Amino acid sequence: MKFLHTADWQLGMKAVQVGGAGERVRTERLKTASRIVELAREQAVDFILLAGDTFEDNAVERVLIQQSADLLGGAGLPVYLIPGNHDPLVPGSVWEHPSWVSGTNVQILSEEKPVPVPGGLLYPCPVREKFSRKDPTAWIPAESAAAIRIGLAHGSCEGVGGDDLEMPIPRDAASRAGLDYLALGHWHSLAFFPDGSGVNRAAYPGTPEPSRFGERESGKVLIVEIEAPKSPPRITPLHVGGLIWEVQEAEIRKPGDLAGLRATIETRPRPEDTLLILRVTGFLEAGEQQELVRLKEIIDARFLYRDLDLSRLHPSPEDETWISALPPGVLQETAARVRQLADPGFGGTRPEGATPEIAAQALMELYLLSREVSA
Image (tube, rainbow, N blue to C red; front, side):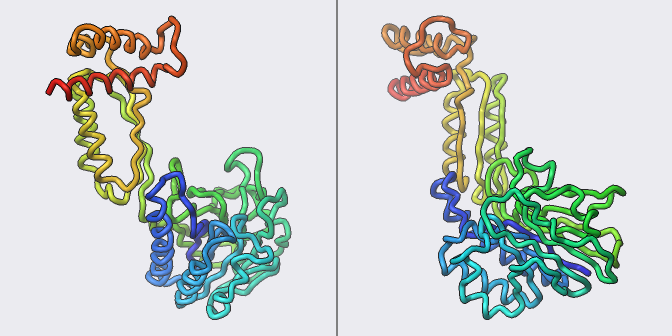
């Protein structure tokens, strides 16, 4: 038996946190779904398993449901999928749309009963509500069989995502039910769960297209091969994701560090496909302010989405240029006061809202504006 295991496509995801890049994020998810189907053909798998959350919710556009049904219906091989907690099997759900009728190779598994698949038996665990505290795999009988036995479930495996689990699945669910493999969905990062002998018999492939910052191992699908009942599965992760979501931390310690950071950002591959949060910390020399402006220009011009966080970048307290380069009088006095407020250790009275972060930004802006005026 050889199959492709995927989950959590979440087609129609709004991605409001990335503003105008949200439309590209939504478009890319459907492109990734198409790449998955093509990969399944290239790998000559027997079938595709989709372990829930194919859609972001049951209110996605009807055209998107039709596009998805057409894509899976044209896969040229069997596709087995279950509803997840984002698209549960409820009245009026996406699974009632008439587009699914024409895809004879696509089976939406809505009952807890064994389903024959090429080479064995599949035990589906469809989700019927958005929140549940019940183990969706509890119904699977612990029995021996002459065929390879596969589970298909959507929920939180113990040890993943904290203690307050939705649709909790025991870590030993595969062993308990005598399954050769348990195909999981719900967790967005790649994760494996070995049995008592160290064999991985349960896994999350993660979302095939990254959906947020901080996902550890997303953008993949799993190719699973099982020779015979009780044989250890051979699991191969393959990358299919199109977009890159990255949080980068950079600390400025000495003159030249900012130029080095700018050079690194400037040579980054595929910025047009990258959503970047760049957090710059440390202390900035006044003479490097223009380098900071250049860094911002590059990020704004090239990256699909960008968030340049300078809230923990402070003017260097040892660089008197922040004050001396300003015209004498009110500007120098103001800058000296603002620099005091930019010091996190300042013990005096602060005006309302004058946090060290805001004061640091104000001092750097004041210096930059004065340089522009003098030029």
